[in-house]
Image (cartoon, rainbow, N blue to C red; front, side, top):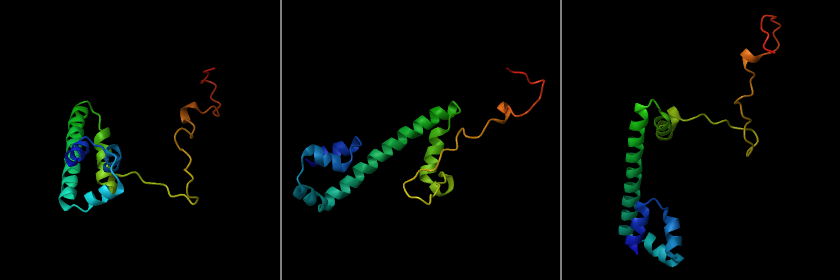
Length: 123
């Protein structure tokens, strides 16, 4: 059973989901959680999966960098160094209320119809 758990961990399935898929009882889970060797292997296989994902992300970043795309690099910086590269969050006075969007609410200055320039006749 432990080998099944390790194989599933290596494919990215969360531990709680693995327990459910294998139909483990609470007593079995508690026994596993108290096993030091099991916990060491869980950490190893989880870290192995994370390492594989980072390797894949690095390959994608290299490919996209050649194309002038830096999305993954910016995302990784914002996650790894969130204090310096993360987006600033707006703290609202009312919890649970999202701030209003600011994209597209300001008028485009070039499309402002309030000027009375007679030479600008786009009608």
